[in-house]
Image (cartoon, rainbow, N blue to C red):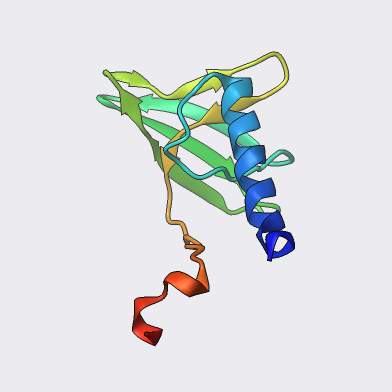
Length: 102
């Protein structure tokens, strides 16, 4: 049974390491786009993250602000931008906690 939890535990530990690396809270999902070109632009009261897919499609996402400051975390080699984009969320539950099967 403990072996089955392995991938979930590994994911959570990796998420905590990423949040620690950038020095931020983890109330968001991580989407690594390491090979994509990207830019951040300001438009009046909004900040936008723009990135281009491998097919050349431009994607715009609204940058989240915390206390009025865009949530952009820079380190020497990486930048993490917290933005709202259309996402699919994979909710992971323990089968033993499923109330519909009881």
